[in-house]
Image (cartoon, rainbow, N blue to C red; front, side, top):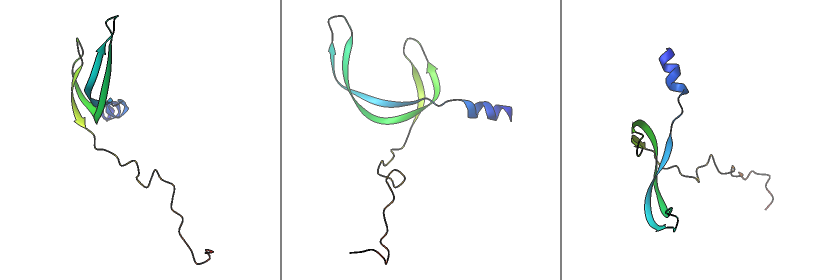
Length: 83
């Protein structure tokens, strides 16, 4: 039971899978990159931290942002509505 509580208290790491569409190397060595977001994911298991992070992830389904829970309720016409 204590193990279940520890698992519930752990924060999930959410990320976005990106495609690099363009980049510029600046004079000081930094990169300016242009990316396109493809999909969201949640990290299952971190495989490696150094020199680059790698992990097993699960792709998250898209959410319809026009879902009814985000929009104000529609007003229903009743018999007393003036036309």
